[in-house]
Every structure is written in structure tokens, then in C-alpha cells.
Length: 324
Image 1 (cartoon, rainbow, N blue to C red):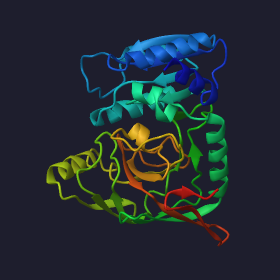
Image 2: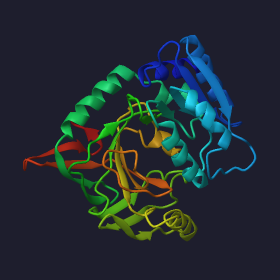
Image 3: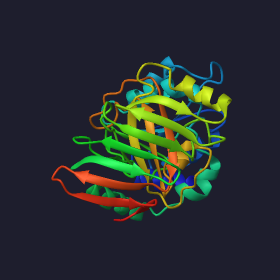
């Protein structure tokens, strides 16, 4: 775990000697936090560990005594357990952590398994090259047509909304650990079509049967699933506030070592998958959704056609395979 932590601190977060690293963890993720602490010390950085309280979970806001350690850090690692009810806390923490020039590795739900096998054991140089090539193929896009064998058929409008990636984290931004995603904030009021989630739902694992979301003018107008109990949970999370059911993000997984698991932190980076999130996207270029929540819905083997502002078009992903 220490080796994985060290490689990600170097390659993704660009940790330099003498920098102050704040590691925010909790009791369940303490060993992962310890691995990042040891790795930071090996790189001659100055780590501090903040353990979230056991009492009061799920948290709805950032603990007051976390503000001081955040202020003193240049790099922040968030490695703690993930729960759907804590999404408002995580959004607030990210907003505080990315203020100024801090670089943030955001890893709610990271596990020892991820640290040792699969997504963290990746060739970061090759992953960064892939991300750069893919980002180049998405420049000057006007809109996307996204289809998938499970039944997804979506049109998302993205003119003026740049794609970004988490494989290198710049000052004042965050990226997930494990990393391996390219994503953007679609225009919130224009998306149309059907999304069939046959993968993972953020903080809720895999649906027991395909979950179908109908989208009109960027908002979910109908949700269907044969499992009524699961569907009710989804509806409740999409009704946290008026913008919780509004388009927030479109993402594409590019990490070949990542697996589609019940944990969205890993699943959304998986090669041959895409996902759409609804809710907050204030941290993305052009994003205008101020919801207190954010929920991702993943689907497999997408085909993505890009229509550019100059009138040309290109199929950049076919059956989940990136063509660049």
C-alpha cells in the first residue's frame, strides 16, 4: 500500500520535498491513511493525519476543527469510508480543500484491495499519455451522442464545456484516487434521452435489475426499475434538493487496471464504461449545478460520437474501446 501511495503522490499530485500533506481519514480507513503517511515521509514531505470522529456519522458538515489543518496544507488526501448520506459533507470538504492552490487526492471509499491490486497498480505515464490523446479528440466539441447495448441513448450538449482528467492534479483542483477518468459538465438544461444503468450507482452498488432514467431538458423526468425498494432509494437521493436530479457530469473511464465493482470510486474509472452524474458540478469548467449532492450512474460498452463546432464528427469510442 505504501508503494502505491508513493507512486500516486509523485505522479498524480506532484508532491515535492518539504510540502505539507494533510491526510483526512477515519477508523475504518486508518491503514490506508497510514500508508499515505509513510509514503509522504519517504518523499521528505511533512504529513499530518486528521481522523474524522466516529460519533455523528454520517457527517452532514465539515467538523470545525478541520479548518486549521486544511489551511496549513499544500496537498490533501481524503481517504475515508463512503456513504450516500455524507455527500453534502464531501462536497463541502472538497470546496474548502481546493480553495487557493492546494492539490487534492479525493478517495472516499478507497480500500486496501484497491491499494494493493488493480487500479492503483497502473503505469501512470502511459495513463497520462492516453488521457492527453483522448482530451485532444474532445476539443471543440458541440454535442455528444452516446449509445450502449443496455439501452442507453443520450444526447448531451457540451459546447464551451471543457473536458478534464484526474490523472494529473493541478493547483486548486482535485482528482480521485484511484484515478483514470476524463469528464466534463454538460450544459445542464439541454440533455435528452434515456440512460440505462447496468453497472454501478454511486454509494449504492449495482442495481438488482437495470435502472432506466428518462432525461428531458437535462432533468430526470422518470425513473424505472423492477425492484421497487431500490427504485425508492434512488428517488429519495435524487430529491435531496431541486438540482439533485439535474445533469451534472459525463465521464469516461480510461484506467485498464480498474474493475467494475460495487464501489463507484473504482468502477467509474473502469475501461469500457461511461457514467452520467446528477447534482453538483461547481468544480467542473462551466458547471452551474449547486446541489448539495452528486450521484453517478454507470453503463457499459458505450459508443460515443462527437459532433464538433466546425460541423465535423468523429466516433471516439466504439463499444467501450477508445479509438485514440
